[in-house]
Length: 89
Image 1: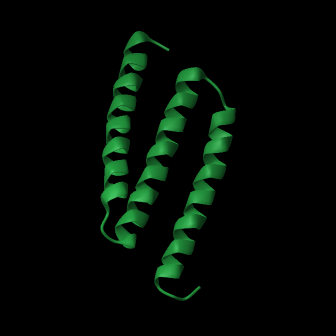
Image 2 (image 1 turned 135 degrees about the vertical axis):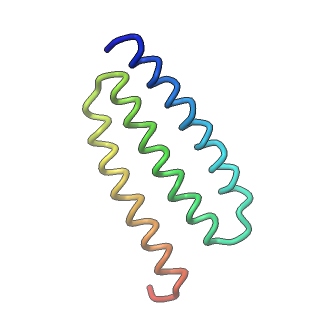
């Protein structure tokens, strides 16, 4: 990869890390369970993005496989919590 692409990937990673930290703060201070569930979902999406960025930077395909499994598990977890909140579990 060229230097420009690597620099842009590092800038994107920094922005994603900042968003991840701000979302984690929201997760910790969320007044309701719904706020925390949404923040958890945003955290998982952010971590999926960071893992994908690391996979591109390190040229490791195995991280993308782990990314897919993690994404599926986080989706199921959010659906289960949503069903629990609606009391239809």
